[in-house]
Length: 370
Image 1: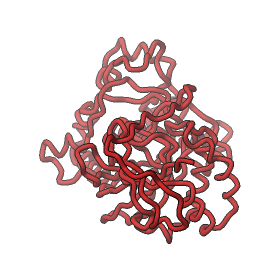
Image 2: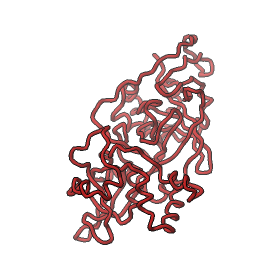
Image 3: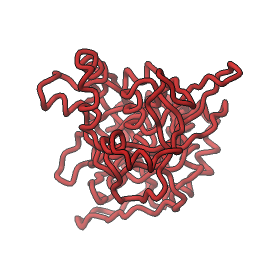
Image 4: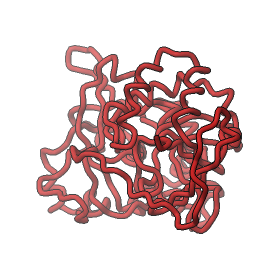
């Protein structure tokens, strides 16, 4: 899930060494002979040092796939990882064995635990919808997507989704701020929840144009899950998008009731989508483009942006044991062991994102002290 990216430089994370004393780390040829460093506290998590052998699947991951995401993080690194970026760039043409050896030499894995002690959390997924839209309203395309209204301020609540849809004064405030129109209000809701999307237009000369609508702000209202709203009413047994759309098909007169159960809405800005940009996702909270299958959204109070993370999750949706980069956040991504996995764009990505909800374990890979 995406958030706006400002120009404020990334700050060094507030990491506190736990008061429990631990032996000083000594150099050794084997990782298994090194004495582990002390635990580290973050604002919302505890990091406990572990051996590389404790990372499930570390020897078999195709690390070169993650290196593209790491190179993106090095376009806007925080102060902790900036000194490593020249080495990361050099290793981009190396094989997996050399990359793995370098990681073991330069980084220390820490298991991420909640402050209360649990090391298991929740993995969900998000994607970039690809939708058809119109630049002008019509009988078919009547659902507007807006730029931020004049006077919108960060962290100051604006009008709710229901007021935006129905209050004349609010509609007047948004007049002229329309970017595009969609045919389906549920598609608009999905686009706002994901925070970004690709929109295909048919131009007057018959050519087709694809642009990106990127996150440009929100009404700062709390996010409420429409799926949970249906579950609470006993209307559905599971809160997946196929189930939600099936409920809508059976209850077409209650669409607004469903939509308005979530007061939060998102405003967009249009971005040109070059052939290079099309190979990556939108920019996340770190300010760099997301890489499908290798970028995650995290709670920055637990894991700082730009941190390489080992992710392990097994469930009915997918089995993952891989290197990812913490490059984004979202309003629903809260807690120590919590991640939203960016799966790409289009229909298949949306299907996976809609059903992925399974247990998660995380390890941060932090630079060793030199």
